[in-house]
Structures are given as structure tokens and as C-alpha cells.
Image (cartoon, rainbow, N blue to C red):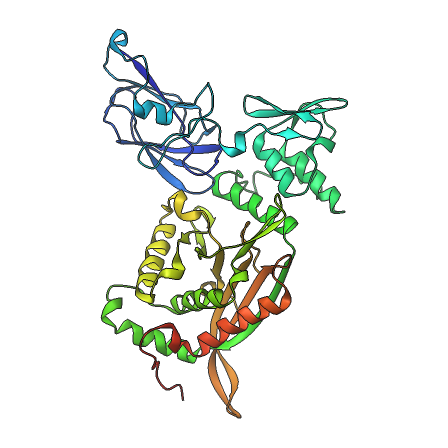
Length: 439
């Protein structure tokens, strides 16, 4: 009988670790190919893993609640095939999921999951000014004039994002994430807060891992690397609210949720088409600004697993009914904590709806790699001047934060003003232009 080791795959792009949330099988269970055997949580989302083998479970190598690195054996399955009759080369499923030991190469993955053969970009050895870096398991040795220093690839990436030259960190042994953060704080003239004591009878501590860990690192990276500028605008959304009521009666929206957020999303897409440089990012490595001719619209969502930013890909090519369908599916999946990793990648611009929490506005931090993020506040009835007369109107505050390296104040302000104009009169966002008299 042949024993098959199933290694934890990279279910995203360059993810390095995951936590085993729940095993669906036990030792002695018989499993089939593609049967879901466990649920894991990565820095992006919770996903289920299918078995690449059929046979009997002989060992669960990782306990529930344990976090392990990509490539770690998590389960062993006896496939029922005599070892002497097993083929010399691994089956295609094996090739997709085994961690390679030879020359790196790319391969397809099993039903959307699987670790690529060869190293991911985050695990690739690179050359530094001081000499050649060599891989040492999961770590990289950087040669310094006073001895080698070991640093894991995620730590090196964090150092690069924060503008820290990891070769300048003087420490014997492994350079940690904390060492890099200390160096970043010193570089920017800041000090780490003193260590606090812990009273287990009156305090709780939450392990920083999974989505929380990813969010904390992403926000720190964004805050330190992108010069944020924020502008805000108050908008009379009476016609937007009437448009929402009208669209709910359309046959195309039957069974769909229609809300002001849908109109906001449509307005952002329209304004981004008119001001394409808003939909851009900063490429530090190549000293270029990347202006994208497609819009992947992200929505910051508070979920049971933490802050996530699921994405509607190619949203600029959708009509409003299609956008409503995609938005509803995105929100429902995020609330359930089941957003797949591929729906949280490659966003180009983001909306965060703080109004649902009863907040008037805020200054959001950019999603790393994006040039702009729009915060939408709650709609409040307040006194407002309309045609020289004071009336009570539904007013919403919009706040736009943007990367000032490639988006100047004029561009950011014009983009926000255009969104505001579309919300004050959203008729051009859909086919039938009459949104109703607002008087």
C-alpha cells in the first residue's frame, strides 16, 4: 500500500501559512478524490481543501487551531495501491500539490487550490547589493560585513514595503517582523510604546494571525509608504433615494437588493472612467505609475473574521442590474466568511461604507497597491439650502483618500465632485432618466 502525504497548498498568491480551523475527517475514514477534508484560514479568507487522493486516512499531522507553513504535510492517506506497482512518476494530481525539490517550474492546481511547483515570488532568492542571497529552508541569508543574517521572505517584504534596509539591522540570528517594525519606527523618528503588563483576570488577548495579521500588516505598510491626502464633500442624496425606490420596481432587479451603496458604486465607476488616473497605482520597483484600463471595485467589509476587501472584477463593464447582483453576492459571501481568495485580489479602487455603522465620515487608509478609497457616511436629515430656501434634506458625507504621489489635489477633488454630482442627479447612471421630482 502506498502512503500519500498531502502538503498544505498555497490557495492564494504567495501566501506562506494557514491555520487548520476544522478537520472534516478522522484517522480511519475513507475519502474520495476532491472530497473536502478540512477548513483552513489564511491571511485572506477561510477556504475548504479537497483531497487529492482516494483512500484511507492514516494520520492527521496538524491539530485544529495550529498554524503551519505552506508545504507542511497535514494529512497522510493510504491509497490502496501496492507500492511496487505505483508509477515511477507522480500522478498529475500529485504533481500539482507536492512541494518540489528540483528545478522550479509552474503547474496547474487542483480544483482551484494547490501549491505551484517551484517557489512563489515571496519565496524566491534574490540578489542584494552585498552579494548573493541563498535560501535556507524558509529563510534567506543576507551576507553582511560582520556576519550572515537570516530573514524569512515575508519579513524581507515587510522591510521593503516600509523602506527599511534589512542589511542595516544589526542582530545575530533571525531577523523578525518586530525587528523590522522597530527599525521602521526609528527611521521615521518614532518610538515603540513600552511593553504592557498582562492581567489575565481582567484582560483578554487575541492572537494576531490570519485575517487580523494580514490587515494589520497591510494597514501599517500603506500608512508608511503612501502619502495620504483626504478631501470630503457633503451631498444632497434626495434623488439617489428616489432612484433606489424606482429601481426596486424594475423587473431587472427582482430578487436583488437595491440600496444607495449600489448607486454610489455606479457613480464611482462612471467617475473613474472620466478620470482614469484615479484608477492607478505606484510601482516603486520600476519607478512607474500604472494606470489601469479596467476597474476592479473593492468593498471594505467588516466580517466575523475581520476586515476584508472583496472585489468585483471588471466592474466597469457591468450595467446596474449586473452590478447589483454581483454586489449582493459579494456582501452575502463576505458576511458568511466564505469569500474565496481570488475574490480579494487585484482590486484597483475601494469603497468603504461606514454609514451603515452610524458614522458620518472618516479618513480611510488606502488598500495597499491602490490609488484611492472612498468612505461613504450615513445619510442624515439636516437643514439644507435649496434654491434659496431652507429645507430639511437627506445629506451624505463622502471622503476620498488618495495617494498624493500620482494623484494631486485637483484630480482628487474633481473626481470626488463628479461622484457628488452623480449622486445629486443619478439619472445618467441608468437607462430611464426620470428619477422623480425631488421637490
